[in-house]
Image (cartoon, rainbow, N blue to C red; front, side, top):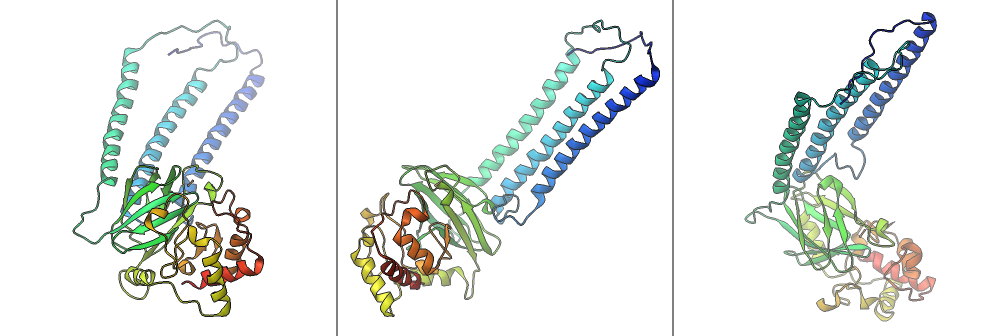
Length: 373
Ligand code: CUA
């Protein structure tokens, strides 16, 4: 550290001119400080807005609270340190700047200061140690599985290019992209993948974890708010990575809209085709190759060994989902028909081949699929 002093030789040639430069320097310094404060304020306020659907800082689970708490802990501490360092820096700039009339010689050169060096070694060490202990505590908290004696919803989650498969272990349900859970009931996810590495992330539910081929990683959360919470695959996984959304719907414990009611609906076989168009659509589905990848309970079911990397979503109750193609489109007959007719045009790199289905046939299949509530 080098402290510069400018003593003596203060013979200002034109004191009026010197005063003017002095003022403009202060003005520049004040402006820089103002901009810094404004930037910090903008950053802080941006974090306060709670209306973003994928906002980590508006958690709806206990685990989400942990992540948000750590964000604020680090954010506030780092902001204080940043402000202190900036203040010292600006002070040194102003206090030891070259003044009018300085003779241009070097100030006294100072090397080493034991007291200062001790201070700036010990303080950061204490800060880092405290943060390490607290952070490891948080990691243990997030990786503690819920107690099994209570009710849990356990789901095997498989990331695939570019959608999510959900196997409900105790309910014997297979669904896709929209995960249904119960308020106040712990959820255990077992995450894996059959192709490349994906990452399961529903920001407001807390926690982000990779879905890796050949491995299974757990993720736990207990939802405490009713509602729909969207997420996104958070690991670059190919052409349609950006179109690999997911959704968690939190149900009540009792009543018409309860989790148990949803489970009962999903366990039922697929609804019968009724109209002529629905019947035609079902026939096209059965004869044009769709059943090589898709199951519809009570209509055509894939053997478990056929559900590998190339298989597509289980469509037994596809009509009950709010979106298709992992949140890529609204679930409408038009959107399903467009997809069936030319998958790659709707979702780049799609694993579903173009079967050369004409517009009328595509519409019939879409009508039948959409009727499968
Ligand atoms: Cu899957 Cu990105």
